[in-house]
Structures are given as structure tokens and as C-alpha cells.
Amino acid sequence: MSGAQDAPILSEEEEQRLEEEHHQKITRALSFYGVHAHRRVTRARNSYEQQPADYKRLLPNFPGKLEAIDAAIDVNLALVRRIIGFNVGEGMEHYDPAEGPEPVDFDMDKVNTTIKQFVRDWSAEGQGERDLCYKPILDEIDARFGSTSTTETRPLGDISIVVPGSGLGRLAWECANRGFTAQGNEWSVYMLMAANFVLNARGGPGHTPLHPYSHQYSNNYRSEDQVRCVRVPDVDTFSIPPSANFSMAAGDFLDVYQEDEAWDCIASSFFIDTARNVLVYLTRMFRILKPGGCLINLGPLLYHFDDNRDAPSLELSLDEVRHALVTIGFEIVKEEFPIEAPYMTSSKSMMQTNYRCVLLVAQKPLAAAKQQPEDKGAQSAVKAN
Image 1 (cartoon, rainbow, N blue to C red):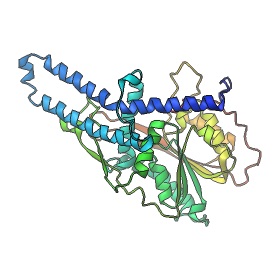
Image 2: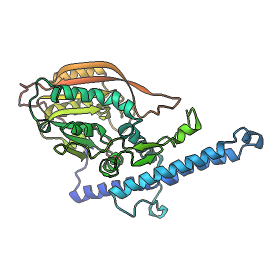
Image 3: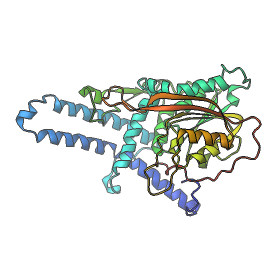
Image 4: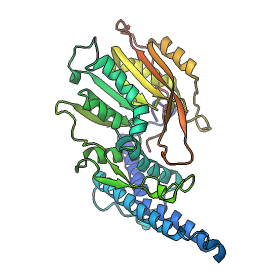
């Protein structure tokens, strides 16, 4: 964790060992996907077989549905194995029970979430979510720095944008596709491995099929909704302008970004509430922005550590966040609320979760003093997983 005042100081060798163990843990969880997912189908099949014959006759298509789910899981497993092979190399794609204990449910939930994230970031089906969550940010970037700006005369490639909490990298890719210098930042190794695959695997639009809702056994309107196929990516990820500068940076936001006045724009979607202390994020954002630079943030305030008893966290209301921004030195130049937006929600599910998000645009004044606000570097987010 970043900046923990009571954290032990580790040697470089010890840090490298822990990082390698962490990557091995994640690779093992990915390789366990098939066993874990098929095991859930087996439970459903056993429950069906235990029913009286009269009840079985009420569900003539149930065995066929389970076969379809098994087949969908095999398609997902092929994707997961490609991700492992693309990032780690051949030979790690298959789960070996002799290598250690089984991954826990928490880790497998991360795998399932990563598979669903493909829909949000890189499918035609996810376009609706992207239009609600990414498009307002991109419109602001275009208006303030891009071709529609009335004040910006610098070449687009000279304008640098960082996207913290970038997931599978679509928002950062969209910035680069407009010609900006863009860098996605992500701390989840699950997401980083999947992003590396989707951004760099060749094959053109739609080269990879997946069944993102095969793990969703509740709130299905039709049985076929659980096993419907989605193809990714919906665009050619290699189609960004040759002059564009696009990269992904792994690690905690506070660890990676420490250089003062290095960025023109911070574009964040569903990110600032991942902090243990959002004030540390906001203070660091002010420091790393150039004078005249902007923080463009869209999302809710679903604080990730509000029920964590192991470490202190600070949960602020929107008006407190707004007051903190101004006190730090930002000028709030735009606020739009509410913006209704889902997050990785199946469009065909009987349960829909929507957030009432805020779009905040906060600018660092051109005359910002060289003396930056004090950055305490407190813990911000859980160790990358």
C-alpha cells in the first residue's frame, strides 16, 4: 500500500519476491477458472437430479441449458488461457492441483469480473455504458484541449492525459485515438493482464468470443440470456493515429505519479472512491497537474473501504469533496448531477443497478503557486490484485 507510515521497509529482493508471488497467485486463479466455473454447473446439475420425476418433467429443457452453460464456460476458458499465454507464456494455462491450495472465492470473483469488464470496455453491447460513463469525459477533453477547443493551440500530441483506474484501457485508448498523449494507470493485475491482451492481440474487430454472463444464475429473463455470446474488441485497437503516444502504467496511483506539474489532464471514471482517503488522491492530482490543467471526473462515491475494519478510511459527501477541491486550490468550472449510469450491468438482466453520478471538472489555476499543497501520501488503495 502506498505511503503507509507504519509499513515495514522491505529490501528490493523481498519486494521482488512478493511481487512474483502475487503474480503467481493471480495466474493460478485464472488457470483455475474452468474448474471453478464447471463446478458451479455440476452443483446445479446435482440439484436437478435430486428432484422427483414429476418435477423433472416440469423442466424438460433444464439439462440442455446446463450443457449450454458448460459450453459457454469452455469458450471463456479459451479466452482466459490466451490471456495467460499472452502475459506469462506457454505452460501456465492449465490448473495443477499439486502446486498449492485452490484459489479462494474472492480471487475467482475477480476473474469473473475481469471477463465481464470486456463487455463494458470493448464490445458493441457496452457502447451504451461507455456513452454514459466515458463520453461526457471525452466531450470535456475535446472541448478544452481538442479540435473543438477555442483556446488550445498546442498540437494534440503535446497534451498529456492520465487515466487512473483505467481497467481494460478503453477510456485511455479513446484519448490516444483522438491524438493525445494518453496513459492508462491500473493497479489490478487481473485487469492489466486482460488489457495487455485486448490491446495488443492482433486479429481485428471481433476476434475473440466470450460468454460474460454464464456465471449469472439469478435474474435471467430467458435461459439463453445467460449464455449469449459477445465478441471483442468492437474496434481495431491498432487503428490509433501513428503519431499518438499511448501507454499503460501498472501500480498504485500514488506510487506511480509523483512528479509535479507533469500532466495536462486527469480523466477519471469511477475512480476517486477507490481511495482510503480521497483527500490524498485530490491533493496528489493537484500537484501533478500543470497550471491550467484539469481534473475531469465522473462517477459515484461508493467508497471501497467504508466497511473495512482493518484500516482507517475516510468517506466524504459530495459537498465535502467539492469544498476540499476548492481549498486545495482547484477552481470548479463545471458540475453536472445527476448522470444516471450503470456499471457492468447486463442489459437483459431482471436486476439493473444504476448510479447517480456527478461530472466534475476542476481546473488548476494558471497562476497556481509553485508551492504545492502538502501531500501526506496516506494509504489509498488495497494492494494490486
